[in-house]
Image (cartoon, rainbow, N blue to C red):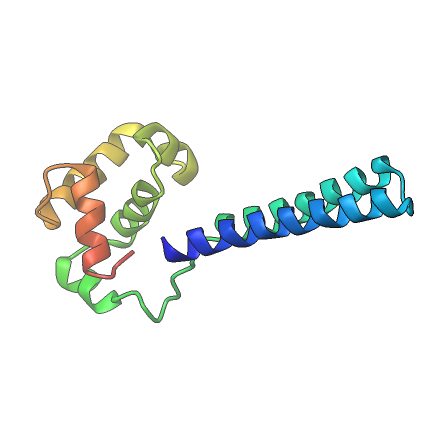
Length: 136
C-alpha cells in the first residue's frame, strides 16, 4: 500500500513539475503549447507503459521451491499433478481436457481424486492447500 501511495505521489509531483515547466515555456515564448502538450503526453505514455509492465509481471515459482517430496507423499500421479496445475490456472474441466488431450470425464475423475487426496471440498480449497504445501 505504501508503495502504491508513493508511486502515485511521484506521478502527481511529476505532473505538477511538467505543468510548471510548460507555464514557464509559454511565458518565455520558447515553445508552442502543442509541443508542450505532446511532450507531456509522451512522458505519461512512457510512465503508463512502465507501470503496466511492472504490474503485469507475475512471479514465477522455480522447481526448487516446489516440494516434490510432498507430491509423492500425497500419492499424486503425474497426470493428477498436471491437472492440479491447470486447475490452479483457473481452467475449467473442458479446457483442461482439450489442453491435455483427454476426455472431460477423465478430468472430472482426476479432480475428484485430487480433492480426496488433498482433503478438500472444493477446487479453490484444493488450490489453497496445494499452495500451502508448496506443491504448485
